[in-house]
Image 1 (spheres, rainbow, N blue to C red):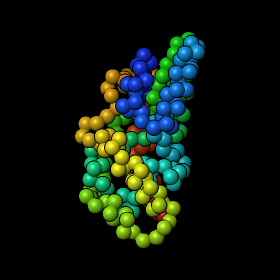
Image 2 (cartoon, helix red, strand yellow):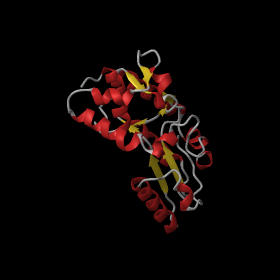
Image 3 (spheres, rainbow, N blue to C red):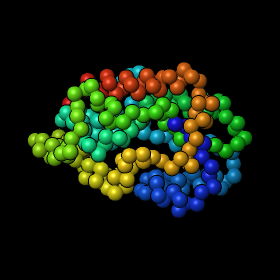
Length: 218
């Protein structure tokens, strides 16, 4: 979603959803731009995927690609992921969206836009249905039993240990959990992007998930 955000919230409010230094540093940078008082468009890229047409691979250490690939490799996904959305934006479509916003925006005003997929993401359960991949209560245990010390296996173990077991993540995957509704508005995207670009998002994401990842072999 490309979202319009009113930048009048106290930093303390964002501490509930921005809990790490990486994101906090971006928030501070935004505040510097806003306090300068100059017209600006601040873009917040969300989860970026690979090019939707060239099908280049994501980085091997990208959290989402890593998690999805491991689910394919071991034939199951974590039960706690059942209702979590698989949501990302192909890099080329994110770039196209940014260009569309710049071309149509009033450059004398300040805008803050979140660049991510305007289409509703699918849940892990919805995505893996029909692919022969079922949820598992012992997903991480299955990973730990795999032999070998290849880079991808080491990365997924680190990813799980440091992120998936955190209290912040557990709160994110609760049914109905989402970014606070008062912080975003989907209408901005739909008003600024041509329908053809919105359709490209849906097609690009689908192709990447069903063709790119499922055919990739280590």
